[in-house]
Image 1 (tube, rainbow, N blue to C red):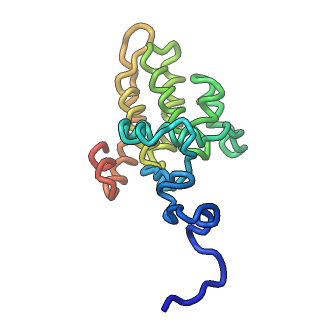
Image 2: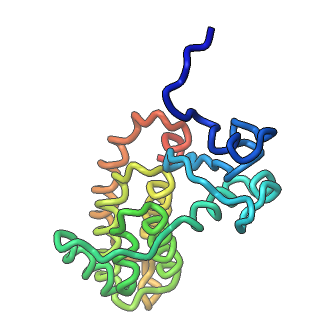
Image 3: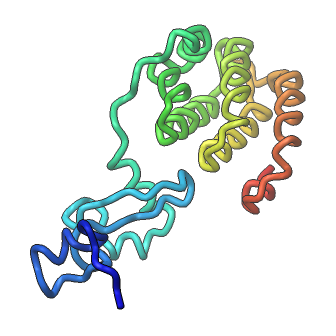
Length: 198
C-alpha cells in the first residue's frame, strides 16, 4: 500500500488545474532546460523566444539563447576587484571590466568574447593590452565554468598572435608562461572536452 501523504507532492500543481495533466511536467507547464555548462536547471516558458524545435535544431546555440534570456543586468564591480576592473577598462571599456569580473558566467564569457574581437585589430598600446589580458587570464583560466574557461583559452591564443600598430608581434611570453602553469594544473579535469582543449 502507498502510505498517505501529509502535503502536496511533485506534480500537484499540474493535476490541480487539469485532471488529465501530465504530472511529470514534460508536456504541461514550463519546460525545464538543463544547462550542461553551469549544471543548473532553468525554466523556460513555452511561449518564450526559444521553441522546442529551435532547441532540437540548434544544439548548443539554443541552450545559449535560453540561458541568455535569464541573464540579468551587469552588477557593479566589488571594491576588492576595482583595480583589476580599471586595468581592463583602460583598454576594453568599463563594461568589459564589469563583464569579466561578474558573478554571472554568461557575462564573463561575453566579456572575454568581446576582448577577443577587439584584439584581432593591431593594438595602439600593446603593453597596456597585454597587461589587461594578463589580468583576465589570471582569473578566468581558473574559472569553474567550462564555457568561460574555453573562452579564456581562446583569449590566450589571440594574445599569442597579437600585433602592435606597426605589425610587429607583441612579446607576451611572460603571460603565456604563467598561463601554462595554470593550464597544467587543470589537466586532471574530468570533463573530456576541457582536457582536450587544454
